[in-house]
Image (cartoon, rainbow, N blue to C red; front, side, top):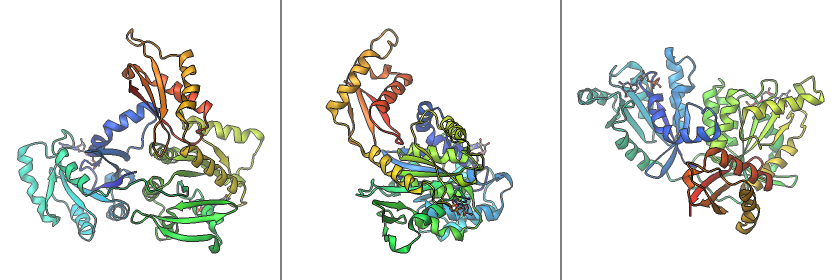
Length: 434
Ligand code: GDP
Ligand code: GDP
């Protein structure tokens, strides 16, 4: 889990170019593994060993070409609320614009680190022109060329310097986040669970500044609900901006162990739901998919559920080992089953397989299906073990790790899942030299 950095600024200054530059290296690898198209506006990056999440806020504004001042204003405010640091990007080609001044005004009142970044400084002449941005009253600025990369290092050095070290909190209770698109039924679900005030044991301020866990203890279940505060606050933001829910999801997901991904059965598993799914996956969180409002689905023949399930599995390939439940918050159908499943997924995620047992099962499988020879070289896997990380990661030791290709790693993952229950949990496999 890392800190969150938001990039704000008016359209066309180069936010997404910069964003892509920072996340490219890592995400390209992730994409190759999962075969999915990533959310183009949220990603992970790291610098000097410090990991952070990056949000390109511009990406969430619809019709960003003729953006309304109001939208910008909202976008910046939300970014401020959620982020640990803000990169405010401006464009040396156009110079200072009215919209830049509006954003600067909002940022003046912020007590989080703000980095004024003058982009498109592709050459020395342009570096001189950048001085006009002093007029924004934000002090020192960084110059950058998102296209050729110059200036990136200086900015990132300063940026990671101010980011808080957010450690994976040691909580004895599972932390569940209820996530999904607006109107999926998240608040209703939470209300159905904690509706009666006396069952909320405490509001514990999380170790990180503004996340609040609500402890739940009922029917033999005990867990912390992450970030319900944000959901309660929802009424203030009437316009159900997709952007808002994505920002909230990022926060909630990062602080959770298991995500309960709610979707509206009448709307299906669309691209936005998929984005949230991959967000949880990329953060190595446990996932339960809850198809809500099942009461509204009229034609419930035996096959309807099956078809629905198949469609979702198609959308989440290759990570299909995920429970999918059909619930109705309205009629309270299977909502406790949902929690029970989330608890199981939590246990799967915390599972530690003894090394001896792991080798006893995996090595014979490998023996019978050795990695194919690559460039005429034979790869021999000698030993494997689960790593002592908060979520399941495995190392396979061999003579030539670089020759193990993706399909074989996929094969190992499948075998691992067949033999040990990791349903609902992303797993990572490393090949190491021995
Ligand atoms: P956004 O709307 O703020 O996300 O801006 P984009 O990243 O889409 O960039 C807008 C335009 O500026 C594109 O045509 C980019 O190629 C161009 N651009 C971005 N960064 C630079 C840069 O460092 N130098 C130059 N010359 N052009 C850039
Ligand atoms: P959120 O934006 O995800 O928090 O969604 P809400 O909890 O505010 O729910 C959005 C709408 O869906 C509300 O009108 C709810 O009453 C309705 N709703 C939630 N769950 C169900 C359900 O299981 N069945 C039906 N028919 N409506 C539901």
